[in-house]
Structure formats: structure tokens, C-alpha cells
Image 1 (tube, rainbow, N blue to C red):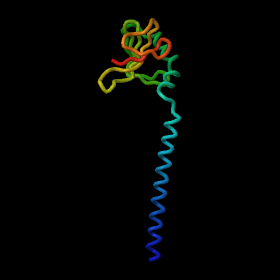
Image 2 (cartoon, helix red, strand yellow):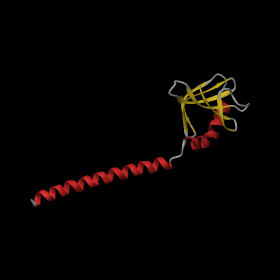
Image 3 (spheres, helix red, strand yellow):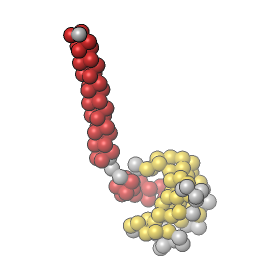
Image 4 (spheres, rainbow, N blue to C red):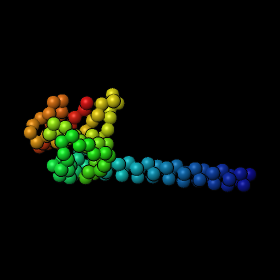
Length: 121
């Protein structure tokens, strides 16, 4: 009987160690995600690099996927003087991202800061 108790104790101990390791892993992932910079913060740190690129792209040009600052864009293009930094496609199939518009607010865009707007569609 004593042997059976030891085996059960060993299994319980192993299970407790596995559960403890899983809990510690979850806590670590949550801590990393909680301290990682959010999208708005990364945008703020990327604006200067994005603006520098906006000054260099020619009317009608489209750049393919690339990272600028801390953000990755599927495409970057200049259309009618506006520079679109497309981050992707939303669930409705519409392009989303930022637009650099030093001349003022473009149609269907939400002001973020300075000459920067967010667009959808």
C-alpha cells in the first residue's frame, strides 16, 4: 500500500509542477504584452521616419511592403499629393492605415496629430 501512495504522491507532485509552469508561462506572456508598446505609441515613434519617406515618394509611385520606424505597411503610395501608408485590409475588405496630408484634412479620414490622419476605405 505504501508504494501506491508514493506513486500517487509523485503523480500529484508532477501535476502540480506542470500546472505551476503553465501558470508562470501565462503570467510571463501577460507581463510582456502589458509592457509592450501599443500601436499608438509605435506610431508616435514612427512619425518622423514616415514623414521623411513621404517627402521622397513621387506622385503616382507605390512602394511595396516595408517597415518604416516601428510599423510595417503593405504599401505606401502618393495620390493627389497625399501619401497613404496602408497597414492592411479590415474585415470588410477596406484598406486601412495612415495618410500624410500637410494641406489639410482629407475626405473620410480621422485626424490623429499634425498632418497625420487615419483612413479606412
